[in-house]
Length: 255
Image (cartoon, rainbow, N blue to C red; front, side, top):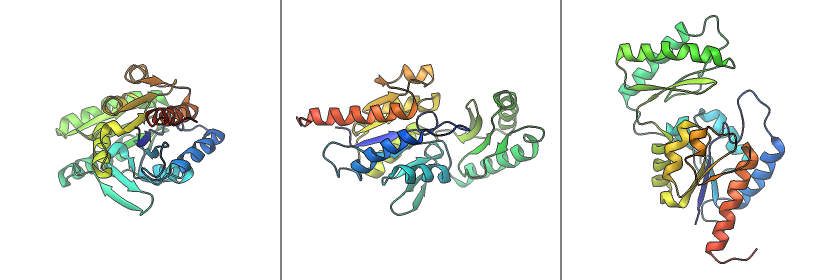
């Protein structure tokens, strides 16, 4: 049985700097609301999110879809409960790690932004991040960020995408975030399904009971999952419906 379905956001439900597919999101919200809280429906799984985005963005998507279960933001750096508005911070964020992230943040703001279209992601707390629409600027900045981290011997790693550069603590991964979520919810990882599209999702995808990637996912993500679905939000819808069908089959329920 799939008791909880978890979705990445960027690449699965939306794309930075692009208009969201509102019609598909409305369809998904109907399914999310039907599933409701964990184990409140016999065959529909509860729905959650796991994203590298900061809490305001993840909370907004959770509200849009009607998510009531805790969601992960900053790739598991924190957990937000939409029902209680409670925020929990990952236990791996120590004062030393926090100090290193602050130093990287200050350096990024003072040395990386001038003359570029990039902006600093002020909303993040457990990561230091730059975002921007120009892929070439991102690529050119990655070695500079890596050199700064290496020079200071920080216990941090550079985690870039085509539109962002995140500096995160070692061990602060979606894989660890998914384990944390399962423990907090009293779930076995085999009870969880996850859909993700990028390299940062791969280990989490390998960890759960059922794994999906949308058609637009990175090749390494597509190669790591049980099922490749349709493009973006339609793919998430198809994956949730596949879990529902499988749950019904396990319970011998005829539609």
